[in-house]
Picture 1 (cartoon, helix red, strand yellow):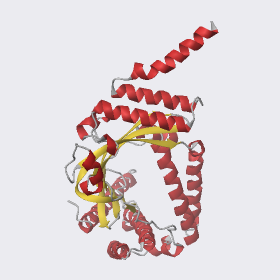
Picture 2 (cartoon, rainbow, N blue to C red):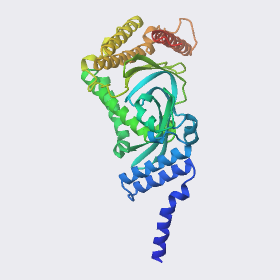
Picture 3 (cartoon, rainbow, N blue to C red):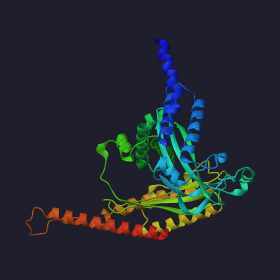
Length: 405
């Protein structure tokens, strides 16, 4: 009886690729099987890579990939057969043979789909664009009859494996509580050192959450609810989002993200900047966040709207100057200052009660016991009008500053 069972398992193992072969979906199922085998310890990582390479070759055959000697080239319509519609778009493409990225004048599609999400690893199938330059493949073209038009946009299928970090999953709620405690300390004592500590740990928490989100499938709303609880969920708000290509370097670009909320009870504007390196020549700064580049709240108390506008313009100019000089560390430090300045402006623009007349005593001769309710309603209406006016002023300033239509 045992011999029959063993024989059956051996036959199933040998027949498994044949049974599943025949379609892209079947190849994906085959890869899922190998990934599960790795997770339970039946195969090691080297064997998993061999199997993944085999699946990639089979997928290329199923899709009719050309130029197999170049790793298999597929077209956009072929990729859609297995990955559906693009998940993203980019202007940056890799130049074949030159080992660098170049920026196009238009967006092209990018695909990334998670096909296996286990406890140890996550595997995604990706397709990023490249530009073909014939001069780098002259030897191959002498031997091959196939040809690709010079400057053509091409794609290759690629399996990306990411190892999960369970400790980050378990500690994310603790990290949130840690940030909350640091924020309370900074609120009680807004010193430069406390600001530096809060900013540093906030960045670490943001990176941790980014990894946590990337390695978890499903809707973003469901993931956020699992962390913060449904009781803390607020109503849906419409946010105006603009990502501005602020500065282009030879191998990097500076992106400014501008967010505005028209419909929020307390209208706010968020402003952030980061650098996206392209190619091996870009070296981001190792340390960002000079304590001298951070400010305490006291400095902003006496500033009015025109003061904020003038300083925003000055910081934007300094950031551009440092980027042009290739001095990225100070540029990012000034970007931190810009974010803090904008946050202070948010707070100042919404804290309007000092500008509203204080309630008066009940008018002499009046016997209305609810006169204070009318006064309160009038004050609240006036506060909302002032907040809205301040928000529209800030919004118009930023839209004009970055020339957003």
